[in-house]
Length: 309
Image 1 (spheres, rainbow, N blue to C red):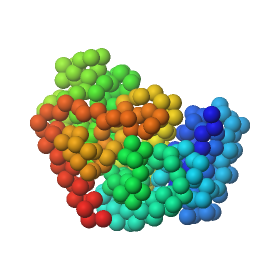
Image 2 (image 1 turned 90 degrees about the vertical axis):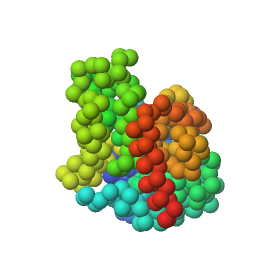
Image 3 (image 1 turned 120 degrees about the vertical axis):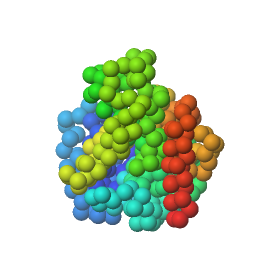
């Protein structure tokens, strides 16, 4: 079956996503939209050179909003980048304006598919997109804390000397940012809780030796190379792959909450079952009292920002 994906925003994050998706053979057609037409066209020319080297033949071309009505998926990575030591939430005013403009054009186009959003601050922008379009919540998927979760699993896998796929129950939830919550109480390796294993991450030190390191990793990358893009590009391709292939995998992503975890009217990163219809259901983890308190704080931070924009 022919699958059409349209990327809006062909900067480093968007093109990293495209490169990952192309190498996995996820779609047969890719459209690219960007206000910087010169950069967009250059990326199209560059990415089409991969056609002869990947599993599935595809076409890629410069596109516009009039070409969205028959698209299956849209991936939005448009927005200004994060500056060194700037929090994701500090970008909010500029990028909310951008996402609302994009949302109104997408709605007017007649698009009926599933939208993925990975522009920052992603929780606020996903919420703004939902409110502007009125689209079904299941069909709007934010990147949420999918990258934070990948960083958490990587840290644990390095510590334990196992594959990241052998790390169970390790999720980062809440805001994709400084108030994110590491669900330490759920982390297991081979069915055993991490606290019972020979891990340097204990109940007493994980908030400083694990949680803070994971939350700060983006700043470390930005300070060294000005932006993060390979990790989130690959993570977005994974989310798209799970939906296209209808694998029902539980993946952390940004979802509009309507009572889950006792929270309403906010988009936060939580584990979700993804399938062909988008977000099929939210998985509610059992959290300890400290994790619940930290998630409530994360909710308040994001909700307060939503109310201001």
